Image (cartoon, rainbow over all chains, first blue to last red):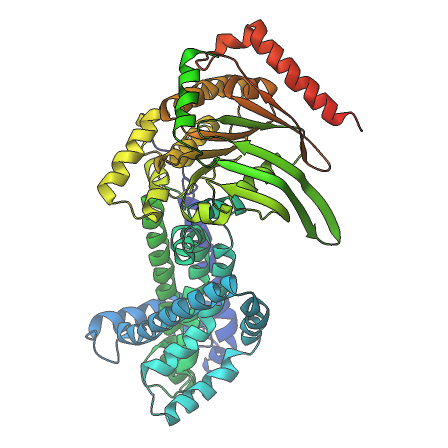
Length: 291
Length: 275
């Protein structure tokens, strides 16, 4: 027997909302692009022509959805995947930095959380710094990291991964500290009666108990890692990556290119979230359907 | 006393002075913190011999759980001498001399029933095949064979507590410490589990220290009943229960049973007389 899921009956509302958004977007394109069109258009142009023109400018203030779709299709399907003209190539450059950053964030977050949970001094001394680290805007940190690492001869993926990891380690640390402390005293006493070693308490109790907290953190971290990688591409003068495409687009007023890159970034982060959800579901399945 | 009991008593004497399983002399335990001083135990003297089934009974706050936790080295006495198998509680714990059953099942929800029972064996480094065999054996013993691969949340409260008893038995400790294991269960389940436990105790010859609120449970299960009183937690009276070793639920209607229960009730009342 199949239990009714939350998604049942949600398809139509979602479609209606998307259609409404697209409608609003087209109207917005008319309003925002209108002034420019009116400057160039003939006095007696019909309203119909006016509207069509606002939706087909080369450098519109707000490109119409079909223009972005055409740009995406042209980029994805007419160039090889290894060509810098293909957005997939740029997406991969950014994603690889974000994944490396997420790896750094996971390692650092786990290490910090284990330290904070086990060593009282670290709880007092480290946590404020962890929180303070996130009050510094990443836009201020990013160029410094790039310059410093560049001076050390480290360029390419690593500086971007570092910035990405800097953003993403925070939710993981906070989530894991909470998760590692989730077991109730009885469950810990139980292991004491078996004279379990500290690492056994960590691996048999604290870590398994924390997984329910890890995955929500991982969702936040995943999106932050991607944002971090994109932001890291802005001051590095990177030639490749979604951030580089955004920057190049804004230099040359290529609004359609910017929106296509934005759209690509959104799709990428959705795929990332889907990957986290899939992993979560697989882990939950091994535990009898609950995390 | 029956002949068999007499014989076993003789055998014990012949074996020489084996150390008592639990020997407490003048054990006191004071909780301090937040400006409060709570005397949980005051001058407790208690000796528990091998094969005994000893119930600790008394009102809430009389320190019965604290005493059990002190025996298990989960609390440290402030003064007095406490020995488990002739060792300090800490040494006894490190030798894994006892199995502990908590008030709540304390199962790990991410582990299936059988893997919960295997947990202590895993920690103690028992080989994989033997782990599984022993876990299966003790799940059989508590009547949960069909639930081997279920998860804790798929079981009723009584079944969960039976899993936790199987888990405590799995590494075959000579001493079983049970802290109100059936406190949260309904009367019918409780009766059944009492019978289970009684038979288990008779078959495995373990020593059991059993904390309870229930007079009838204490009388039904125990060879000796330790009556405690609160503030400060101390022992009022130790009652030897000379009901026959083999018991069934019908025993609870007999005059002999009711007589012991009355003695326990009177001792409890005496412990309360000052307030």
